[in-house]
Image (cartoon, rainbow, N blue to C red; front, top):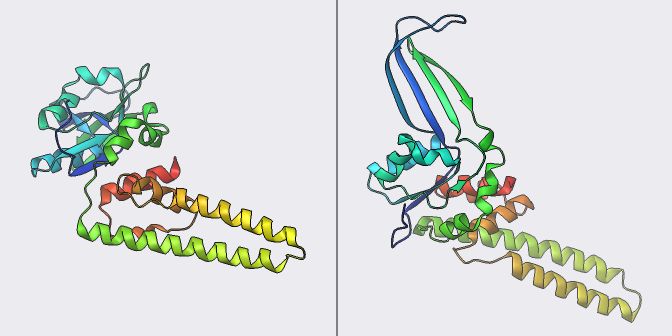
Length: 241
């Protein structure tokens, strides 16, 4: 669907399924038997779709990042998201693969689920695509989230500078001739350029910055406690990508 004129209030990322749901069965399903269901429905499934639709019903602007096959476009469950106003423009359409599917059978207060989802392997790679990166640049940051982000950013920068200072002192203590001074100067210049590249506080790139800092051990997940769950989940996926 077309992009809105303003950025979304919520960006959700995760696995999408075309859900097939059978319920009101007369008998429990068993191997070798055919059981008829009195009710059946097809719906968008997976946490990403559930969250997106719920947020839309509450009036929030929502964008969704996931991966589907070309077959999704013709499926009513996928079209339901567009009809609800969910922006799926950053979704990857993977040619040659089928959209993930889930068959759910409900009986006597319990359920069983069968899924087929090879398309969801390495799903985190979707976050590295340009449409997803551009969409994350539109994320809104509440005052509370900005405070969390600034605190975490400063903490990671402090840890990084402390590590550089410790190593600089160790290198300085090993210097025995003038050439060592210039080597130390060159090393410090390299460290400054690396830190300047890594520590970028623009909100448009902060999720990528935090993912890098988590991956390198400069931050822990607890340091980011207080961020919107959708942002936090996307950052965690970037760490694994």
